[in-house]
Length: 169
Image (cartoon, rainbow, N blue to C red; front, side, top):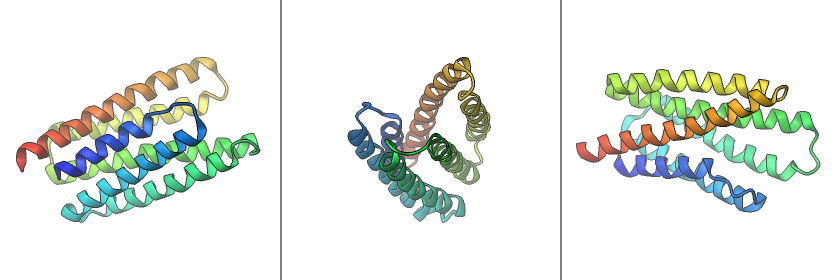
């Protein structure tokens, strides 16, 4: 289990990592999706959870969305790009929620329950700010700040999960 959460932690870091070089970023993001999918597979071997199976399927969807987004980036219309970016964001947010939810279902820990509630709050806020960011620079700035906070929140949570499973095995 600890190895699975380590892969999840590394995959999450890579998912948010960007060098602003399209093809290199694509490779990094695809590697992150594969690492997270593999981690979810390892965790699901132990828990046999439908939520983890669904999260794995969403990660495969993210893998395909990422390829579609980069493949169509130079010539795609604004609406198509907006829809793809929105689907990618929603899938990412939902996958992380499902991972935290599955841990919450298994451990029934109060701390994990708090992480799950915080994830829901941040995810909904990110989604709303993302939609408003198309109309307001202020919302775009808030989205970027909250997205960075969400990244650190996930790193903290997955490190805690790794730490708990590292000491329990």
